[in-house]
Length: 484
Image (cartoon, rainbow, N blue to C red; front, side, top):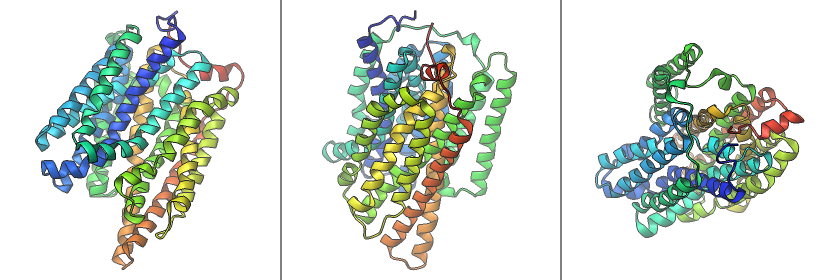
């Protein structure tokens, strides 16, 4: 029996609470800063073009290092890697709050992104090792899914309150108490584990290829809003990123000790879950981003009111992912929940696509605000279960890192594609003389149709790739990892 499996149920749930709190803090940080950007711009004299790097300086290392960080946990110690990343993230957050220049802030954000990746990469892997029992594991995964989803929605509300009352520095300082509490809990509750050893997976060439490919790919995607999806710069950098990642796959097939065992990449359900999740998260990123803009720019909501308007989303996700989804997963398995959830997301985005320039919250926003999160709350825990289903104990960290990487890259791709469509449609209408509210709304409507298309593509992959399992296989699917 593993050390953690020998702990009491209460102790294990407290350990999961610590891990979920870390996930919530990291997701919260990715969104909370956006609300503070105007205040940061004014205080540190950022130009509008450079201000975006307050976000990008974090996103690039975060998205690029998740896979490598997850593997490091398998090789060294998941607890040690988690605590190291948490310390780095927390200290960099304080440094960002103390920044008195643009360079200092951007440097702190870059280090914060590194710490965030190291912290987040293996969280899902640790959770499924804490609870190998199906009845507890599905509940823990539901809580983790809620933290991932609600952190984004809560960022707008908390960011608005903190920025208006305590200043932009507070959106970084808030990570200090959370980080200290989580570190103390994790230090006490997580047993000291030993990885399989650096020599068992020290593929330095593979690590360099995948990290460079992912970081360049994320950088290229976030710059598409500036240069366009079809520009020579975007296509050139994108081709180089694809070449680096292709080289990584070739390397994994030949390396004696691959960074990512190919059995993980070629698992049908793992591949299907990661692809479906990437598309689903891409559609959800567009939903969160453009709904805020519609509320503020068309319906003329104040920033704090726009944040509060998002509250139905985390409430629905909390009820579904923590209470309803675990029971349904145990009874029906993961695949039916994925299909149902993605269908509801498509329906939610179609509802949003009916919005009007002279609309109102109850008619044009609330129906989609309930339907799409309902689908997300059903699908995400099920996809997490499938994403870890064929993982062996020694690969839990890298499988978790792969799932998180798909989430980050999918979000970046989805937002880039939807933003391009929205900007082109709005720009063309403004040039034709359409009044701004009408032009903006038409652009947002097109964006929601694109989001619906991404969710439909995720549904198609789930239908054709993910296999249904019954009996003993379904039970194994719900309890994919157990540490011996």
